[in-house]
Image (cartoon, rainbow, N blue to C red; front, side):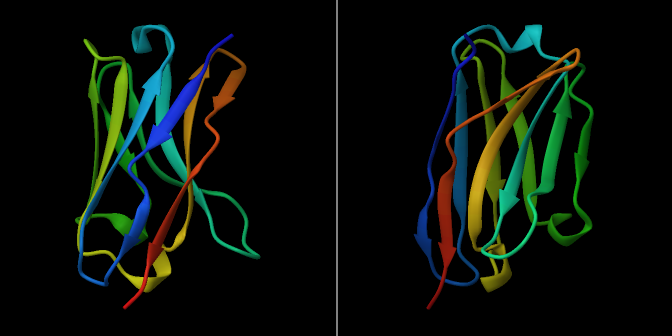
Length: 115
């Protein structure tokens, strides 16, 4: 069974940075796409950033220029570098991996942006 383990969340002041990591239990080459979603209280889960097996990327408009998604194939890990964080970035961040019609999710990591 595929396991995705997120880490790196926490409390940060506005304007600060965090790097989230998502470690997969198997080779990330096996996934068509990996990405990060987030869900704030009372809101739907939304895509933040995605990266394909060929390393093409996509970003939500709200994070373009501030967040960067990357992958380390040797470590089976996907990262989300988050800079210039804003209050509205506060949410639980989930790692996602897709293979065919199957979707896998991590347990989520809390990111809180507050002064």
